[in-house]
Length: 148
Image (cartoon, rainbow, N blue to C red; front, side):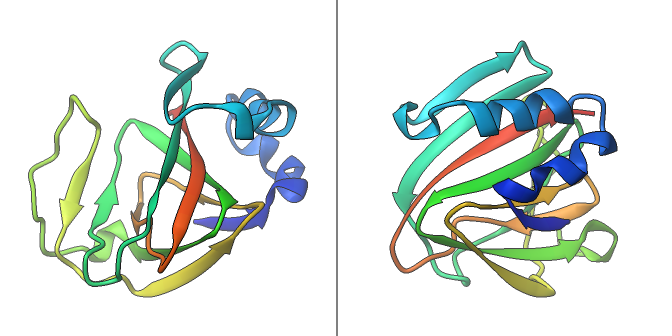
């Protein structure tokens, strides 16, 4: 897991061949003009999901993981307090892996919580279980999905 501001995104471009395009999209697009929903960036290799919702409590948040995509979760408004736990330490699956949606949920409790403010992002790799959308208020964010 990586936490940084969008201004610092340049240092991560070399970690994956598709990160250059993903971070160019985040830095060069008018993200506030995007409606909630899915937006294609580069076919199914890179796409963005815009979310705007009221946050949930820590107790309501479930850890999740993905096998085929890396998440870059950029907060546009509000603070998203995201839970995190190494996937290798998750021992209580709540669901089977859903290949069509590339997601699995867990009942485990996060090891730590990261308050991610406006203009900051968390980057989650497949070995990072994460519980997003935790807040007492509104969260608007864009999640860029980058294929492995």
